[in-house]
Image 1 (cartoon, chains in turn green, yellow):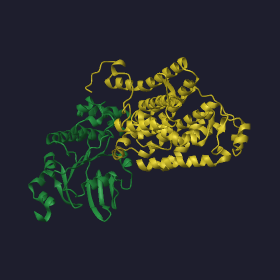
Image 2 (cartoon, one colour):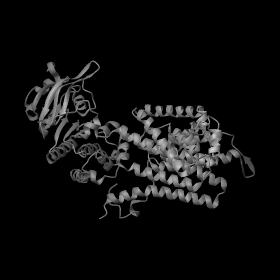
Image 3 (cartoon, one colour):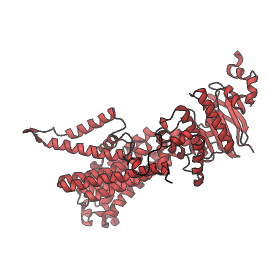
Image 4 (cartoon, one colour):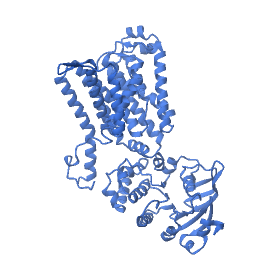
Length: 239
Length: 350
């Protein structure tokens, strides 16, 4: 059984179609990049999976359970965690409080302390600054915090929206390095929106290329670099 | 081994203890050196601590300003009056009370608890509708709720006495009783703020969407805090009535709403210490201005402010705080013992 399945999923904002009847599945432990130009529907797609955006048609399933129609907080409690675009950390809370926020509904109390230790092992800077207000962290540190916060809910599936947004390339390298290490460690399934398909190709994994609310290509990210598909997705008929 | 984290937690735990000790010192000082009128002032201030700390439990943690908390004080005050007034008095003033309530002569402590409990229940029921709204809409709805409660209490004459005062409440509330409840409010507020629900609610204050993505049900935590908050406002309202012996609906309406807001904003809505400091600051400023209104003699020259100056100047002070120190006097900080006092040296980098 696949981890995540989208079946004929459509999202509309008024008359505008953001997602036109998308279907695809993601296997357990897979790393899936979603790439494409602005307005391709990438964020609508993540929104529809996480429950923040209402689907007009079709359904989303995780482990065979239907997620569509449920509230975002309920979907989160079922093991789907989201790292939102622009990080959206809780600036006024301390780093540690940010990490503990999502653990309130976990049953496995004992494991929370272990997970916190894992986070501080992976991101020592967060451990050092655990009592500092999260708003005082640098952009890269905040991105690490947003990822760690999502991990603390003990997700089975993690959605990451534009982790490289507004970060220096060197920091982006670091973010991806840690993200991939954590994925291997926890056996996570990752769905990552990444505007830069070149970046996705370098990190490696499967990639969906979107344009105008549709999937125009689906395959190995590294393979895309060699093809003209990218140019076509971005520039369409003009290319 | 004591970790840095445990030391931090211990430092945070000193906040409510310190606040209560400060208030205790305040009471001892007033009772030792003051007269009857300063004792009254201290009682009022401590009742305000109960009210404003209660108010803070909701407003401070959720970031949603409520204009309706004076209504909870109103309900608490009348519940306490209904259950403690002498039956003969109730037959005369409040003929519409049901028989069991008309005959009730509860102990004052039980009556205060009942006042808080009924206020909390009312908060659960009304909050179930109001708190589903987004921040600003919820604030406006709480104001509508206040207006409704005031209208009901002003017009339901057989049960509430209408706009005329209900008199003859047992005047049992002095500085010590008020201090006891203020301390209880501070302790519960500190415990709530550090509970899982308190943390979740503070997260929704920072970013509601991100909180939902972390699995937090904003409405549920808001409702819990709203009820807890209403409980202490209900108790505070009952204490107000039993401090002066008289209640009427307008004592729990706009001016109380304003004073509670002024105190919270002045001290800083971001911390429990801010709520307490705000009460003390506004009370002291208010007393000083009232003295000036009554007239003093400075270097042989009689000086007095025109009547009403007190309210105007307190409102002005609140505006000045909002302009120059928008986060309040304490700006979200808590009063706590320094980390190095509660065990071990500081070793972290912040």
